[in-house]
Every structure is written in structure tokens, then in C-alpha cells.
Amino acid sequence: MKTPFRRHAWAALVATLLAVGCASHTAAVGTGSHFRGPVGIQLYSLRAQFTRNVPQTIGTVKGFGIHEVELAGNYNLKNPVVRQMLVEAGLKPIAGHFPMDRITGETEAVAKECQELGIRYVGAAWIKGKGEFDIEAAHKAAADFNKAGKALAAYGIKVFYHCHGYEFKHQDAQGRKAMDILIQETDPRYVAYEMDVLWVQYPGEDPAAWLAKYPGRWELMHLKDLKKGVPTGFHNGGTDPNNDVALGTGQMNWPKILKAAQKSGVKHYFIEDESASSVEQIPQSLKYLEGVRW
Image (tube, rainbow, N blue to C red):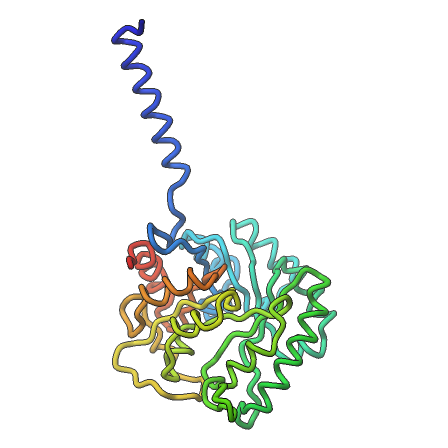
């Protein structure tokens, strides 16, 4: 028979173990009971800071409390040096953006650089030339992505394309937009897609609808909000960077979008804030993601 003292001691021990267990499962920064992430940062958000002081800016990124990053260049340093600096700061390189002509024309060299950087996704954020990105251009781009994707898969690297808005302008006789063709004509084994939410909203499209339309294909996402009052319906792939605002303060319906993203199978989310206020706004965005509900 247990004495009252033993019962109290046992209850205290159980409470302590439960507390430790709960602490070990504390949600990561930027995640909460509804949005589960993982969320990181596209380092292009701090491009101005990186040009001045790379180690200090990496420290700023670390200070946000996130652990995943997407790269956009190596800041004139050797790739292994960049990787080491990030890893030492507790930051894990997941993906990187490269020029389209390098991915398709210098595939082996790109594979080597990806291995040096430690990234397993390599993507292009711009494939539009001087002319319109029409249906013919979409067919060609899809074929190029398939070829490069198959070659890079041998190195354990997956190719992706980051939409930029102009892919939603033209459509074929069957009503397929250039974005549809890119997704439908690429092999999901080798080619994935990164939805930049702003560049779907800005041309007047519905991000949640596109996520639902192609489940499993949008493996990465840029979380970016568009300032209220900025008109939409444009396909030029460009707007004032200072139209990027903290998540939850702009035009996007984030509960709807994030719910659709999780259902669609997005694997990695990166905040990208191109505004001059990114250092101040990124913590606000992370806080919003922790509390968003649907």
C-alpha cells in the first residue's frame, strides 16, 4: 500500500516528466497549432545586408529562430565556405535559385555546386525572355526542365520552377494556361514547383485553387504578402518590392492558402520579404504564422 508521501512523490514525478515531454515538443518558431511548417527564409530577403557583411547577416537570420534557408547566390564566397557558415549558425540549406540557362546548359556544374552547398532542390525563378512567355515557350521550358531534372536526379537533386506571374497570361485552344502546361508536361519524379503566393495573387489568380488543382506538385512555397490597395491583374512579373508587407497585414487570405498548401503537400515554406523593412517585418510574419487559424 502506498503512503500519502509516496503518492505525492509519484504525482510530482509524473508532472515533471509531462512538463519535460511538452517542452521537448514545443512548436518551432513560425509554426503553431494549425500551420505546421517547416518555415524558413529565402536569403534574398536580406540581400542588401549580405552585400555589407555576410557573417553579421547570417547572425541576423539565426536570430529569427528559424532553421531552414533557401539560397540565392554565394555572396562572392566559395560554396563550401557559405555552407559551413550556415551550418555553424544552425541553418540548414534546403534549396537554391540558379539561372535557367545554367540549369539546362551547365547541368553537371550546377550539380557540383548544389553538392558543395548541401542543397537538394535547385530552381529557376525566371525563364521569360524578351518576348512573351507564350504556349510555345511553355512547351519548350517543360522539355528543358525534364531533361535537366532527369540528369540532376542522378545526384539526388530535384529541379523546381518558381512562378513569377507571367505564366498565367496565355492559354491554348483547350484553355490551358502556360502554367498548366509547365506542370502537366513535366515529370513529377524530376520536376517540382515553388509557389510564390504574391506572384499568383498579383496576376489575379487564386493561390488556393492552384494548390488544389495540382496536389503534390507544389513542394516549396514563398510566403509573401501584398500590400492592401495595390491593384492586381498584371502579368509583367514585377511590382515595387516595398509592396511586400508582413504576413497577415496584406491582401492574402492566409488561412485559406495555408490550409490548401498543407493539403496539397507543400514540404518547405520560405518567407520572402523583398522590402526595405524585411528585418523588421520577418519577425512579425513568423509571429503571425504561429497564431494563424482555420
